[in-house]
Length: 205
Image 1: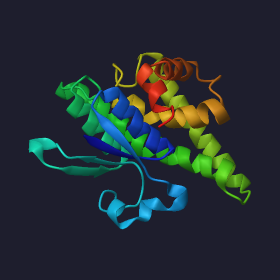
Image 2: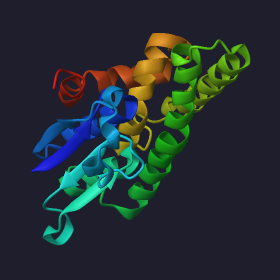
Image 3: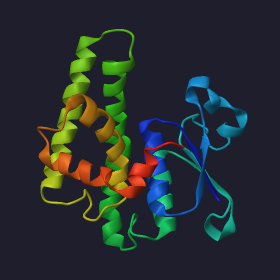
């Protein structure tokens, strides 16, 4: 059975959402980052950069045991293994999903996390940083809103690309920035939020 190493962060929820949507059997292994459990030697063998999420699949490709870190890589792996369309089989469709999966993982989340740090968690008030990352996040929501004006989901059909952006939209867009200026993002967010697997992924564990 797949082991998902999880904590309640944006990237943690991404991986859990991907696991729930995949339909694959998995078990959650909590990694309490407040207690610095991500630095445990055994966990570092799974995630050398001491971050969550992490994944272990004892029945990976060719029956080999595999370990993975990085939420984008985990989403792609789960989607491909599930074979249910989360990561499409068609090569052209995959390219479109990859484009938005990488944007969601490397750009959207990375900058949204800086917004969260400077506006919520940093004990020092840094107005210039707050303004900068607020403007950056709004610009990214503009990009996403434009994309979703002509697409139900970011890469056409619902996929791991959407999952890569949902958590930070839910955490920062709904609760902090607000989505009133981004009606297509609001429609997209609410459609994803209503999915049974998503409700489960954001529930108790």
